[in-house]
Length: 269
Image (tube, rainbow, N blue to C red):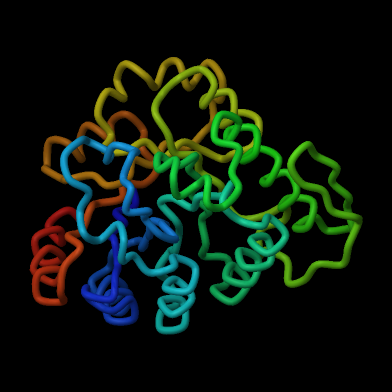
């Protein structure tokens, strides 16, 4: 079971280059970053988990830019999003960005995909909020068309592209590993079976109950819990449940606090 990390990197935290170097030197498996382009101050959408929205949500670095910097100073560290808000992107541009990052890193990129929780943020991007699940499916289908080995067209409800030359290609034929984030339900598990390699639940709680249902839809799907606050017992349980990788939550903090957390987490490697 690979031990990776996730963190809200901002203009006030440890720099992504320093963090990536420390992670690879210490033997961690990967670095996964979240995405928020902006947080409208109206704040009508409740914060995940309730309570005030933490400061880092409105200051987070662009994940693909930060991961490109991390890729340039590492050779083994896996890189990914946890999660990318695919519906908020022009899918043609996102397909190019993902393919470029994956190619430049030697195939180390994983696209973690989420539907999003902040309605105001999504509406500013023109997202069809009530149908964002369908929009994400359509965007991913277009991206896969551009990642295909031969020029391939896509005609969808939300986006379309002509058969096109689009290079570089991701290292893995057909595109990088795709993990879908979200709460356990039949719609999500059907999407995992249809157009993803696995599921990225938050925290890893309740998997004993939900994994049998996932296996009915997608018997071979990977399970990669993200933003996990570790303990020896929790990680042993996730390993026993067949988690392919566990992504541990680091504090959104300056370098000294993050390095102390890495010192603590090193016991799990």
